[in-house]
Image (tube, rainbow, N blue to C red; front, top):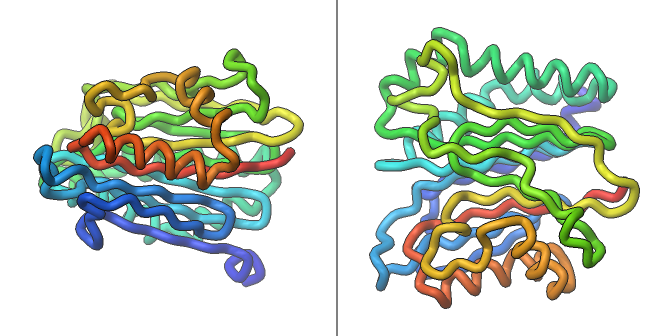
Length: 260
């Protein structure tokens, strides 16, 4: 019961509120979520993104989803995790060695289960899915599709800012599900976080692909971050610039700072 009392959760998808022609920035615990639904004048008419965060005493789980055709596939993935919330909390409240190993096993078991795959086959569309877990001094991720994960530095050293995951245009979860393939296509990883401040940013593909986007890699994001006063200022500036450029694709960002 104590673990549940310390835990916080938040979820959203573009059907709940689309944020068309609107930049939105909100803080949930110590995690910032930024959203821009796209420019109506340049063709945006719906937002198919979704996100989910759980936070505990020494951990965060952040999920960012970018669907196609409808938001249904993204909402299905988020709902599947919410249904398993108690198990996730219990897992991440264990010691770091056990927590990281078990959360990876838990996610693989869920995505590969017959029940999950049979339900996914009935949804309309497919979704990219990026799941990131920070537990103590470690960062874990599981990435399917085109979303991006960045680790940014507090110092003006572009070599220390990196994109952690590999993006893939061909793998998704939904009606056309990578976990239905003989060999599912995804990437995962674990890194130790540096002593000091660590800045973590999750992004849907919309941030990188709008016309003349200056945010196509970690170095360009690090330069933008160096000009910002804080994580919220940074996230808001990315979305404001996308709005000014007439970005048609929805953009969702999740960012937070952790001091190790």
